[in-house]
Amino acid sequence: MIHFLSWTVASRVFLLTSVVCGALFAQDSATASVSQSTPIDNRAYGILPNYRTANYFDPFVPITAARKFHIAQKDSFDYPIFFLGGLFAGLGQLDNAHPSFGQGAEGFARRYATSFADQAIGNYMTEGVMPALFHEDPRYFRRGSQYGGVGKRVLYAASRVFVTRTDKGNWTFNFAELVGNSAASGIANAYYPHERTWSDNGQRVSTQFATDALSQIMKEFWPDIKQKFVHHRQ
Image 1 (tube, rainbow, N blue to C red):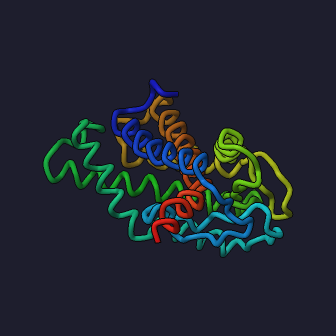
Image 2: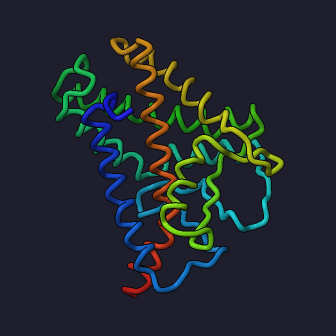
């Protein structure tokens, strides 16, 4: 999958992975564990929307279809997303990603708009539309330090792009993630007129899977980082 990634996407992965490495260090160095019922912040690291994270060990309570769409809306339009969109558009401008967009202000605007559209459409498909249709729960259920060591938690977090809960609380294959990202990639053909091949669509789907997996790893370790560096500093 790595060789399909553009420099812009690779830069995203690098930025996310850098934070993950910090999370792993924090987890290994922590002297106190985070409680099972740790309150969930709306934003992890101050910039990453965290509205769909729940505690694994809390009693399972299903959410309504309306709540699923609310989560998608918050993940798509929370204000840090607009700044991140500018960052990714700038990286794309430097790498000349989507060369048909050109350069200058117009090229930047098109990269910004398409980057934002990718995230918003993907979120609505994987967190709202498809979970409602497949009766799946779009939330990420954070395990925490009670689950085991760093490696075990990383594997658990990354694997949740393939495994999710139903509205009844049972574990199942994550159809919403696969079908939702595939649908979002198909819609993207409308605004990527020069990138409509099977390879282009496969790259977009693979990139979104990788991005979602890294996002969940970051969310898994955010409370550990917060406890280690924020609370200790206070």
